[in-house]
Image (cartoon, one colour):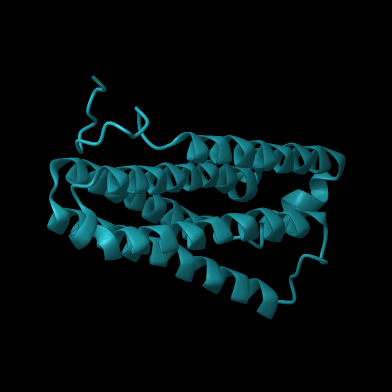
Length: 198
């Protein structure tokens, strides 16, 4: 007899999430690793340009974004625990907090981009800002996608909490959101703090 998962559905894969999300995260991780390695190579080639360009960034704003994302990730983890308990109201509450904090990140990034563009800084300014807009821009799209997934899970929580497929859905969303946060933990020091450590 098949072993039941916490939601009572024996047909679901064991462990958090599904094989599909783990495969996606692994491939996406390799893509970002390639970006990071090329960035470091270019930084080694023209360090003065990179150091000077970093003076145009505001580390404390990025730190605020970091705190918002990490706290949002914790909220998603709590929503997964609430799903396993079958507590739909708690699921919706934690996902609402997560969306709010994700929104803080999005607003911060939009304000930051607007400030750079208003100051005449664009991806064409130099190689540092080419990487800055590329790496943070792709990550920004990941954040927006994650927020869409979270919003969907929240919208379906009252109807689907307690179902095995919903548990896997919210676990997949949580894994993706944690991955997005981990990426930012690499991006933040790489782009904003490397010069400060000299």
